[in-house]
Length: 175
Image (cartoon, rainbow, N blue to C red; front, side):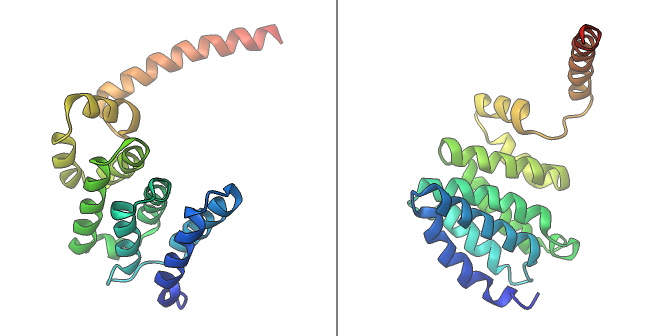
């Protein structure tokens, strides 16, 4: 908790590590950011979310943007319930997520993973973004990213498990 006041400064310096095209530096930088957002809760001023979101949306470094959406997903899951009750938190998170969904390829994929996690907790906020997607992207989101889809999802998974279960029995009897 005490370290939180230094977190934003650290985040800015860690961006430099992630921008470097040396794999070990890049991985180290991401690991530090993940550790920071997991262990240092953001405060009501949302400084971490602002710093991560701004860079995820405006950086000219595509690799950095892609990794920051993965960090934002960890950030989202690590936040306290009291912060998630704050409408400012949701407003800022949704604006970052929406801009990410409108971005390109890998950045969009990270934003879609974040949107799927948000949809589990606040479907009302995720729905306008999902509704605004073109048909192809919406179908891809629903098949690849969406976490809960209701009864149609369970029907598909039960068919897969029956089919998979048969393969496992054959494999087990051959051993």
